[in-house]
Image (tube, rainbow, N blue to C red; front, side, top):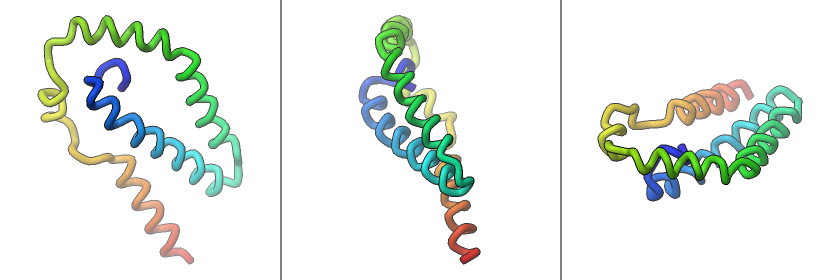
Length: 98
């Protein structure tokens, strides 16, 4: 995501992605009574921060050669988050069982 999207879309999407990943880690840790899911999320965040300079170098190369803007690509993408729909379904099932 960081390498491919325009800076405007990166700024818009990164917080949402981080939030969803973090919530998924919490949910899976609680559901499976195993903190390793949440630990994996933090390890993944740390890895991305550790290699941020490398990612930004790749971004520079990719953005320099870019010929199609985000809008053109997004026209062919699903307009909603499949993962968010899955989370909603899990929550509905979880609440319904109580």
